[in-house]
Length: 503
Image (cartoon, rainbow, N blue to C red):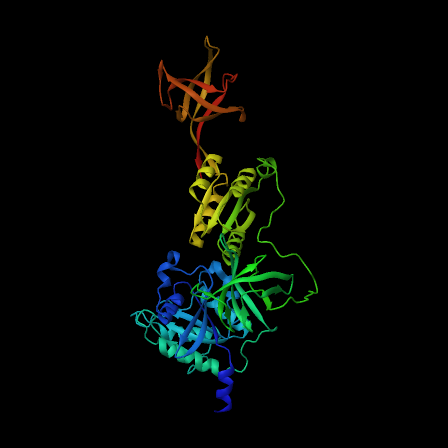
């Protein structure tokens, strides 16, 4: 056996991250490779959580990391390259280079990642592959045969054309990599995602970097020390296993705290004496801001209005994406205040907090049972749940914009001069007037001018021509006007009838 072949046999299975713009077919490619159909299960047909899969191809194993393509999930895409050997940059040939494609290219450049460009949907008639190759060159990705050494593969995830060739290309590129990803510590794994299960507790999706992780081992954070013991390990198909080797994607439970995305976690059969250089308490997923009183939050004289939100989500990655997206909303004189953010379903404590802080509860991929919904209704607490992130962001933006007071302009209808003042038995004052411009409208707003100075503002509550109540009186006609509140007008005053029109 040649030396190179021995080196290849000793290598751990490759870890490959699939990246690209939304709807370019990343998850569809995985479906074609593993003969599943996860794309139909994704809300809105788009991936919204980072995931990892172990796939066997011709007796060899490979781990794929699937990342969301939507612009709101940029942090998740960066987490997807924490432990990776190769990146598949997926581009749909009917669409070309899009904003998230460029973002992925920047991530590739910043991390100097080995890349294979995958041209998907080549079976479509609107095929712009030659133009896209030129566009890639302008972005600094020089393909083989186009002045560079970046390999590429043309495929159709729908028909599975080119899928086997893509797998062969991945292993070929990986086998001749000299600088594959290596862990900084023995017996370690990196966290891709964390979430809470109501029955099991804290669960984290990890990729084993080095060593063999087993049920019952102690786990440690380099920043906070001991985290607990591994109670269970499940593979990518959510089947319980007792151990997992290098490059394996696994779901572990047993940590006392949420494992932070991107964190390196150590595991050991025996307790370790880890003394971090700087011990700091585990960063909590819940971050309470300083509690404000009702008057402080809703001061009418304060020009800046606030929309207070409690965010509940299924995973740490989703939570980070939501918070990042909401913090990115910019509105004049409106502040979006994330009062609390945490994992898990809506519970009674959330309702009480929302009521006390006048907050709206925003949920992503979580549930609120019928009892919680009924309690929320009785407490006048709003719960809005979503399974598509961009819709959540759009609705929050709309809700915040609704707090902006509308702007109005005055549109004058007409003017009348007060000719006489009649006091009725009920002490009401009738202003006998002559309309000299436009129309005076009943029930319209009005103001009274005296020598060009506004001396009164109110509303016309009665308008009569002769003895009849009328809706309007035109120029050149006499009328009787009663305004509210009561006002001591003078002969010669000018009554202006107007409406407010929203801008």
